[in-house]
Amino acid sequence: MNELLKISNLSVEYHRNGRKLRAVAGVDLTLAPGEILGLVGESGCGKSSLGKAIVGIEKPAEGEIRFNGNLVKPLDRRGRPTELRNLQMIFQDPYGSINPRRKIGDQIADGLIVAGKPKNEALKISAELLEKVGLGASALDRYAHQFSGGQRQRIAIARALAASPTAIVADEPISALDTSSQAQVSNLLVSLVQEFGMGVIFISHDLSVVRKISDRIAVMYLGKIVEIGTTEQIWNQPSHPYTRALISAIPKADGNSNMPLDLPGDVPNPAFPPAGCRFHPRCPLVQVGCESSVPEIRTLKDGRGVACVLQTSNEIVVPLETIKGR
Amino acid sequence: MKMKISKGSPWRQPLALVGISILAFWIILAIFAPLIAPFDPLAQDSDALMNPNHLHWLGTDSVGRDIFSRIIYGARISLPLAILLVFLSIIVGSIIGGLAGYFGGWIDSTLMRFADIVLAFPGIILAMAVSAALGPQLRNAVLAVVLVAWPTYARLVRSLILSSKDSDYVTASRLLGSSTRRTLLVDLRPNISGSVLVLGALEAGNGLLLLSGLSFLGLGAQPPSAEWGAMVSAGANNFEKWWIGIFPGIAILTAVLAFNFIGDTLRDALDPRTAKALRN
Image 1 (cartoon, rainbow over the protein chains, first blue to last red):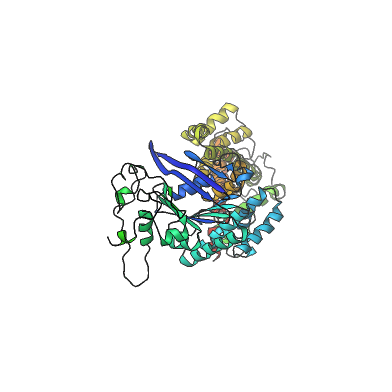
Image 2 (cartoon, rainbow over the protein chains, first blue to last red):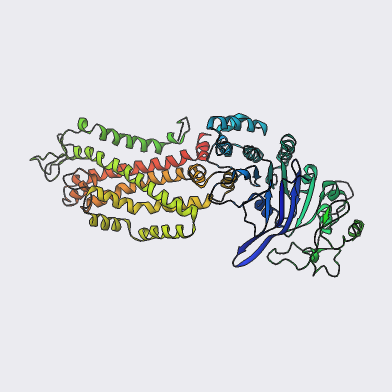
């Protein structure tokens, strides 16, 4: 596979009050051009930390990220190297990610000006980019407070596009938006991927949106990826007990009045992750040994990767009904 | 900075108009002082200590100089000095505060300890000590006031930088390839300049007061200079002749007020959000 992004054994740690918090604990991922990879998981599972580490905002404690073969170095006082500028990020909060005191046009033009374009040309391209994301060129001379959340997120996308990105990490780009803006922004991202062929890592906790736009889905739990596969595989035949619980937790308007499956307990404190499989205290299918041995990601014969001891025989051994009938 | 003075602009608010009118009044007096002032501000006359009358509208001082003319000429000294003070303090304070806030660590600790030391003294005491040490001269008094004033700006700039340097929009700009220099000057400066200008306009009044205070104490402008503070000082020696001190005092008061009103207006005008709110 043509690898745009290759993330190997990546860990991100935070140190608070002398205590170590491992937000991302050894993640391997790849991203191909033109692909949307959905990264899902509960709040606090480390998906935002992973996203920030991938573009170089967070410094990895271990492992490395390669973008087109170049090592992604964390941002420092020197400007970002040219070869990394095509790796961009879209932030969760469109109210914090746009400078309130600078004109929208100037902010989009930044990416072109630092790349050496003269200002008037940069502004002309910025106007085209604003048209591309569905806002008029009149937005150039306006300020962030004159736009709604959805419009701001489209401005943020236009700013990222100014760097001609080949890979974008979108960190919960729609979770701060209302439903109609969510649809607009996610459709915009899909159409941009189709037009420009960039790879996108789409971080979200909203499985139903991820299902609609992603080619592949990676499910994260407490800093580790527990299952990764095509959208079809993950959605229709989830293998890992956590993935199943996540998918069954989506309310369905099918008239069956089925309550979503409830996972016992809460997400453990990532500062003190459970030994062995990190999911075992909540797992409805917990086995002897889950509390001591850490399951590695194994590739099943359908090509997906799963980190669960139940998946040893290259088959999806446990029928879904085992959990459903609980 | 482009500002359109449209209807509903903060510049149309009553206090803004008062501030601008007073400042314009003093600026016109300062520029056309030789045409407006009826007497030479330094010319002594036998009519010493005269009550305000039809000839000397605001009376004369102990050596018979016309107080009205001296106040007009005083505007030529006090107003440019107030603006110079602010300008110098902003430059010194912004550079020190900006570096401290952005780089943090030992740079921050070192620079801000100097600021703390200055702030630990009452301003007028430190300014007195410095200008006394440098010698009683107007230039040294200005330096002394700048030395006292910069930490206020440095702390403001530092806190503004601290609160926005890790914001997503700065990170986004750095991801696009902006250098540290560009981040500071292009991304962060617009978020700072408004507050600093407002502080500057408000502090212009304080600077003027401090400088007048030094002159009042004999450490700033020296006789026979028609500096307002020095004139108030002369009035304090002659308390029963109230007009000698009162009128220059009123001049200081109105100028300080004008700077404060303009400072408030500037704050509203530079914030796109409040400017918009006032327009609606």
